[in-house]
Image (cartoon, rainbow, N blue to C red):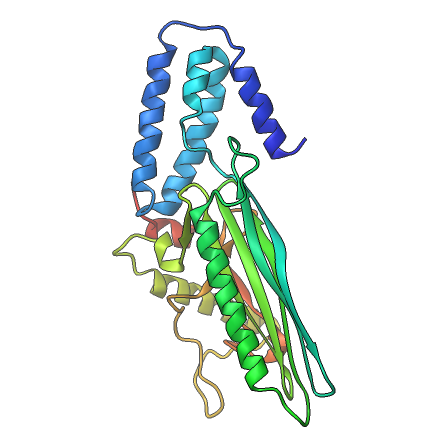
Length: 296
């Protein structure tokens, strides 16, 4: 049974529960608290997301002892998660003796538990869909403008779901441009499902938090640790005549949350290391991120 079927089954069970005095007032209080949390969530996303998850879990524990009216009231609480899926809505293919392109344009389809036939119920998903399409169209435009009559030019664009939890949905678009050699780069789109918003790195932290310094120092520490342990590992920590060293995380740095809920910072190929290192990723420990996150 998938998550959607489980939700609908629980909803049916709630509506069959026998009333008990005093519970409706308690549930209304929970509803109002959830609404207040939702209003605050845009400023304090990460901490609030975990708070809502806990509140939802508590609500599910309380509900088996509540009545059908309260179960109906529960439907008014913003539903954590939502059902997201990705489809390919358009493809661009081109091939001649010197140029080749294979491009997929994705679209996030969404639906909620109350409107299972809807595919556009998330404003954040619509925002990501527009942005992703514009981004890929620019890549195709550049490929078409730079097509060669000698040598080889290639473009490959694909997509995948990186994270899909009750809180986070992350779409990754990967592009590989090939000239004399290949260059891989990605763009990550992170959606906070509970706030229905597209989240950038800076949105995760308190307004006055020096998250850039903390993340940069942690990543440089991990880079040095990896190089000390393995001579084959190379990162550009310092400037030289050929490369610019890694000195700071960018404001629009790619990131996602892994299955353990840890923040993962991602770099493109050649961004902080030679091509042999691929696209490096660094898991940031909770003890680094938690003190920087917004407090409720």
